[in-house]
Length: 273
Ligand SMILES: [Zn+2]
Image (cartoon, rainbow, N blue to C red):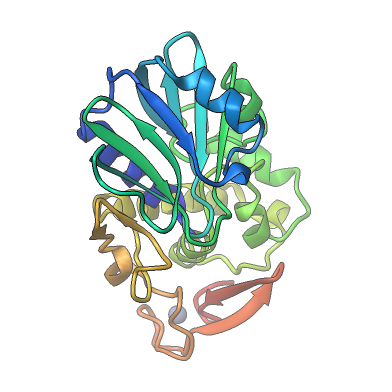
């Protein structure tokens, strides 16, 4: 599932395509349930004629600001992807929503149909449900420590809770905890001030590296993340995720896979205390 670096890569690609400023000439919905919070008719009617003002990311959401204070939020979930193609190109097998500009169209393709698109009058309806973005400058080491300090939950599932911190998924939570040498089952409130600061720094470093490498593509790429047809190249930077039984890159102890909060979790039993 795309996490923050993969969604950030999609947003950067969309901005670099020159979408900002373009007016939407038509919207077509091919799978009604992709539109989460309004009818297909309302969605298509509302966005038609609007201009794209900006494309941002918040957590794992793509946030498209339209003229007249409309906001479109896209969550790719498992297999959603966006591509900008000629508006004359035929409809693809997995295309669920098509947003057409004059000569080009933005296709939301989603083989497994879990992806969702929401139309909102304000950004708060989504932003208010989300915790801070890891790169939010207001998320200082002091604020972060206080947030962790009040929570009994184990640190790994807490990092995946989007209302606590928006953007991390399984890959980057495991990688961040390894980088910070923190055991995934530690209760969040047990982290010292120093440990919590190292964890925040690790999260930012791991995510920044992944963004530079355009995210992580796994397997054959078809059911995973690609952007603009390019595979993300961050897989070579992973140190524990998907590496069970292989030697820890710090101490050579075999990496273990355990289940924490119903999620496969990879860690080094020697380095992560
Ligand atoms: Zn180790």
